[in-house]
Image (cartoon, rainbow, N blue to C red; front, side):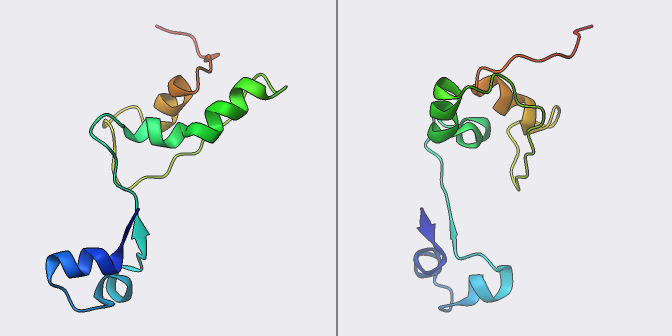
Length: 91
């Protein structure tokens, strides 16, 4: 996690400027090996998937300001990271 205060100090910006103008207090930076879908699936979601009695998820909603790839959206990539199968037919 990187706070806006840390980023402001690093970039020489006025204290509080990022939150005042962008509304962002903190953000997460990924390691080089981590992808958006990896972070979207997250450790807890993977653990839930292994232990849960629920065998399927009907909908994954993904909202991100950054994208792993243009098409498809991150939802199917998160689905793959969680090891969930799709019911959609493949052409």
